[in-house]
Image 1 (spheres, one colour):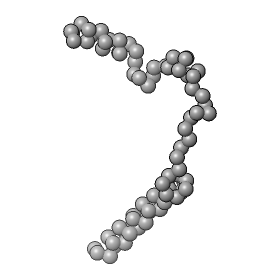
Image 2: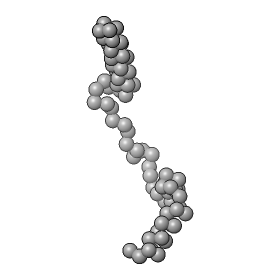
Image 3: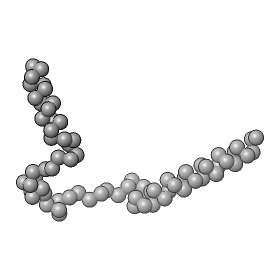
Image 4: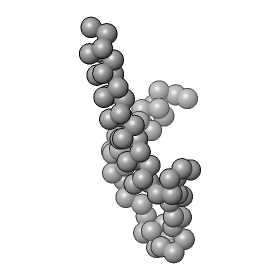
Length: 75
């Protein structure tokens, strides 16, 4: 790859901007069907993501209390 070719590709990328800001062509947007959007899978435990998040937060709170009690007991 020559330096001139490399510089050309690099300058095109800089002019185009970051990938997340680039717009998709209308043909790509038009072809997508909202009915074909995959739904989120349920979590492996608990039945819903809200319950799983609540369980994680309760576990964290229990560990904080447990470590606090250990700290107080072994001073």
